Amino acid sequence: MDHNDEQPVPTDAEIRAAASELRETIALKSGELADRLLARPEFGTEDWKRDRDQRDTPEGHRRLAHWHLTKLRIDRAADIDPVGNVLNARGFGASWQQIGAAYGISAEDAAARWERSATAYIERYSGTAIIPARETTTSATETETTEDRPRNRIERSR
Figure 1: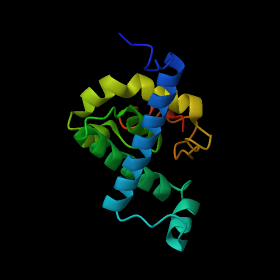
Figure 2: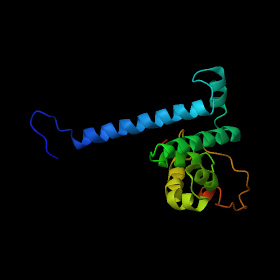
Figure 3: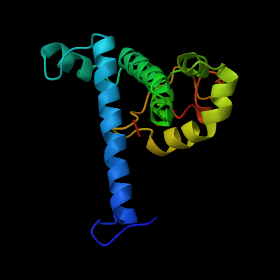
Figure 4: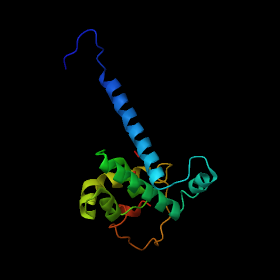
């Protein structure tokens, strides 16, 4: 890169910080747009508080998966890296079929593209504020299929 003495040259750390800020801004705006498209309650209202309080229920997980799938569609249309929304949608129970449909590819292609990252993300963050632990409806002796769920039933905005 050719710079003269009058123009500052940003350091790699400054560039990384700026890129991080941009990713955060994009993620926030994507969420705002999804909220608007889904007619979600405005932040801080009683309806919003009710939705927030139901976050850790099966219905709350379904709504959050749907929200992340909508954000994924927005990201795809804007040609933005979708991995954060893929990981979050998967973490809240979206199937590869749903993720693939939201991104315009097959379930098999979606799983091939993101399954390793999604599984690692869910294993790392399951039971945290990022990916709340979910109750499983199977007994300890039952085996679950992995077609529509993360491996090991660990039951990943970024």
